[in-house]
Image (cartoon, rainbow, N blue to C red; front, side):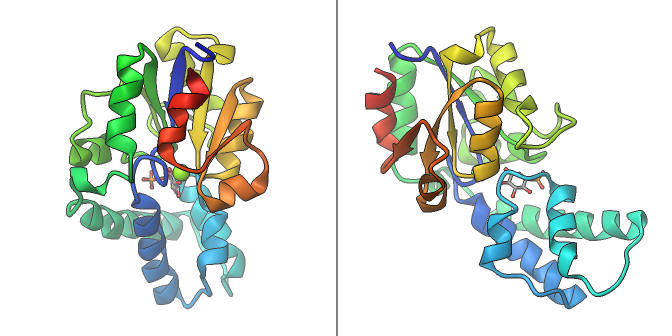
Length: 213
Ligand code: BG6
Ligand code: MG
């Protein structure tokens, strides 16, 4: 096989949580009177919570203390988490459940590599708490994508060399992180594909089967 392990981003690859991130940030930005739209939101894909807020604050007409920043990022997370409580296994993206099981049957190691500190909660909502061989997330990294740390840690947890791993990503920052970590990547979603940063492009999630074989 071409690869021995696959490391999946979570938000926007396994499930639709990227939309909830947008809606929660929008509420916070509206309350602060900061212009925020889908275009700014695209820059937040793969980026940590605080780094995302710093990007939103580029359009803020004022200054904000570190304490205030913590207040607003906590508030965003509360809004976001209340949206997550309504999620279930049906919120996996099309073809994900079936493809994951086929990849597992092919003998591949499967891991998550996500910047999110809510990763384990989301996997629980999706019914995937015990599915992956390793989880590397926002709780075990100090540097956010495009830094490769989250993927390098995932490969370490699996005892795999970077060259054995394929990363699946919907974010430009995530595709850059994979390359920086010495890993091939599969771009998923219109924006990631358009960036041209992936080793492969996924029109459908199930295309992964042909790529790894
Ligand atoms: C990434 C998302 O997966 O997680 C980002 O693409 C998000 O948009 C980041 O900011 C951190 O998420 P959380 O759940 O820790 O706030
Ligand atoms: Mg993502």
